[in-house]
Each structure stands twice: as C-alpha cells, then as structure tokens.
Amino acid sequence: MLGSLSFSISPFRSMRSNVRFPRFCPQHNHGKFFCSSSVSWMVIFIGFCLLMPSGSLPAAPGHAGLQQADAKACFNCHKDLAAPPVNGSVHLPFASGECTTCHELKEDNTFKIVNTGGVLCYMCHEPKNTKAVVHGPVASGDCTLCHSPHQSPNPKLLLASPVSKLCFACHDEAMAKHKFVHVPVAGGECLSCHDPHESPYAKQLVQEGKNLCLMCHADMEEQLKKKHVHAVIEMVGCTGCHSPHSTDNKHQLLKALPDLCYGCHSDKEEYVKQVKYPHGAVDAKGSCVTCHNPHASDFDKLPKAKENMDICLTCHNRVRKTSHGYVLNMKKWFMDNPEHHGPILTGDCAVCHNPHGSNYWRMLRKAFPSTFYTPFKVEEYSLCFDCHDKELALEKRTSSATGFRNGDKNLHYVHVNDPRKGRRCVVCHNIHATKGPRHIRESAKFGNWEIPIHFENLENGGRCAPGCHFPRAYNRSEDVKNR
Image 1: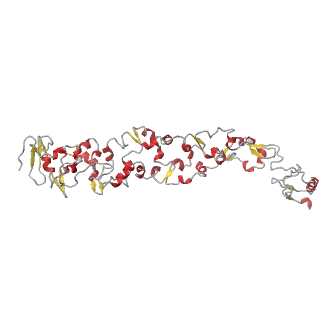
Image 2: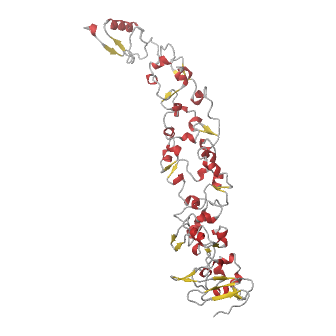
C-alpha cells in the first residue's frame, strides 16, 4: 500500500526555505519535493534531513545553484518570456540568448542590471539625450516607460500600439477628442510630428514651424512662395491659427471665423460690430476668408484676386437680398452694360464701397444721399467729390467745370444745387454701368414708377424727355431755347 503512495511536500518552505535539494531528489517545477513508487525515497530524504546539523545550510536566494547564466536556464523560471511574439519585435541581446548583456549574476546569487537607467541602453545605442529638447522619460533614463527590454508584440519594442496609446498614458487624451481631428492624430501617428526621444525644436517636433506642416501639405509650398505671406505664418507658424491635434472647428482652426481673425485684427472686430451697414461676408455669420487668402497672396492685404471686383463678383453674380433691400446681379449688369464707371474700369469696387462695412448707405466709404430729393450740401456728396470737381455743382455759369451745360448755364447746378428739391446724382446716372454714354440711365426710379428718360447724345450736347415732359435739349456752344 505504501508502494503506491504519491504525495508532494514543501520540506523547506516552512523550516529552511533556502536549503538546496540534493541532486538525487526529484522536484517538480514549483520547488516541491515529489515522491512516488517507493517509500524508500521518503526514508532517504528523512535521513538526509536528520543528519544535517541545524543552521549549517547556507542562505541562498532563488538563483542558488545556477550552473550557467544563459537564456535556456533563465526560461526554466521565466517561462512568460520564452515564447517570442508573433509579428512583434525582440530585443537583439534577448533574441541571441545573451541575458548577461544587461543582467549580471552577483556573488550573492542575485541578478542585477549592469548599469542604471539610460546608461544601460547607451552601452549599445547612441545617446538620445544630447539635443536641446529631450523627452521626459529619456532625460530621466526611464527608457522602459515606453520600451520593453525583452520583447513586444509591437514595433520597436513599444509597450502599446498604436503609439498614441502609449503617449496618452502620460499625455492628456482630450487633445484628440474634438470634432475635427488631424489625420496623423486620428491614426495614432504621433511620431509623424514628434521625435519620441529628442529634438532641436520645441515640443520635440521633427521640423520647425511651417516646415513641419509642409512635410505633408506639399501643395502649400508653392502658395507660400507668393509675394505676401500671412504674418502669423512667418512669425509663429501654422499653429498660430490651426491646432495640430484637434478642435471643434473646421480645418482644426483654434477658433471659429471670424473670431480667429479678430484675435490679431481687433481693430476690425470693433469696426465691424459698430457699423450701421455691415458687409454680410464679414459680419457675425460671415468669414474673412471669403475675400482674403489666409495663407498668402501676390497682392497686398492678401486678397484672393488682383482686382477687388473679381473677388466681389464671386458673390455678386446673382441677386442678393439684404436687410435694406436687394443688390443686383452685378456680374450680369456689367456684361449687359458696356459703359463702365471709372472705378469699375479699374476693377476697384473699394474706391466707393468699404468691404468691411460702413455707416453710410450701401456700405459707401463717404456720404452720399439716399433719397430721390435732397437739399444740396457739399458734405453730403463727399463720395463723389473725392474724384469729381465740386465746382460742377457750385457754379451757376461755367465754360469748363462740366460738359452738361446749355451755353454757359451749368445744368448740373440746376438739377442738384437746390435747397429744397435737389436731385441726387443717381436720379440720372447709374454709377456702375450703362448701355449708353455719360452713364445716363434709361429710366429714373421715382417711387414705384420707372420714369423713362429718353436721353439722346448729340454732337455738341444732348436731349432728354423724361416721362411725359416735352423734350429739352442743351448745346455747349450756344444756348438752346427750350419750351
């Protein structure tokens, strides 16, 4: 019956935990003494123990009796390291079974690291702490905060994959949780922009300023060769306006437009918010980039085109309703009416209109009457008199101030300079374009009625017959007698 006895005991775990077992004593891999088949093993063991004087066994830690420090011996205990990872990475000394490259067996039968911290790694690897900006774990020599010293299922012995998972073990993951996420961040590719060890640039960036962004955004390189580059790009870089990680605004803008622009252009914010007639393109619902290129332009103030009018007509190519009426499809109007006002000929709408808004009707830069009849005052025509000689409306008689005269009788004076019912310029003139000469309208709007003017351009003067009135003519050389 005893011959079939099978049991296991841990003889020195309670009494003498550091005792070495004789070689003839079979053990299983948990350090327990294993007896089977014959009671004789038990007899031998008990005899051995009784003959051993108390206190004569040397103290020995777990590595006592180790004959050789190689990977095969190490794996007898460190079985969790024995199986290589699938599609991962293995540290070269570990793969070669050279555990003692990093671990050293001491006289007290303990293994210790041959050097501390990063010094150990730099025995083989080039130092990674010599540049101006060094990653915190590298600076403190804690390479194993990111890398496994043995093997990993991830590239470069990293402890996690994607690499962003590793980064967010220390860095705030909230930076990547907004609505619009930078593509490298969304893909967990922090190392597209950051060096994980060291860099000559702030935040361990792999390039400085705009050069970092141009590594991917190559299409911007040609644009930034233009004559005028947005100052923030030159002084700060792309991150002056864009978050490199994520934001709740399109294009990863730091703020929504136009508030982002107002961060620097505070004078424009104050102006736009106080004007009586704001431009829809730049008010609270608009965007500065409707007219301006936010990166670069060949033209001063970064307009999207050389001529202001080309920019204006990207919106004013259809009838537009406003809070004060409506605006014609100006693109079509200019095509249908070939006689253009001087500013239109030069493509500069901003001569008369302020593109950021104005306290004057129709976003005009200076005063101009808004009603059909208006008492004449020079200051009320400041806009026109910026270009035109004000004498054309001040002199009753002239031979040079205007071509609109009958003999020397100034007909501009007659129509405009009336203290009670002076007619503003646009009663007769279209200030943008007309089909006929002199910018004379085909009709004059009076209330809801369009009064036809019936203007004829004659060799030395002209003739008109507005509405149901008799025709009236003028001649610059001699006074025409009208009815």
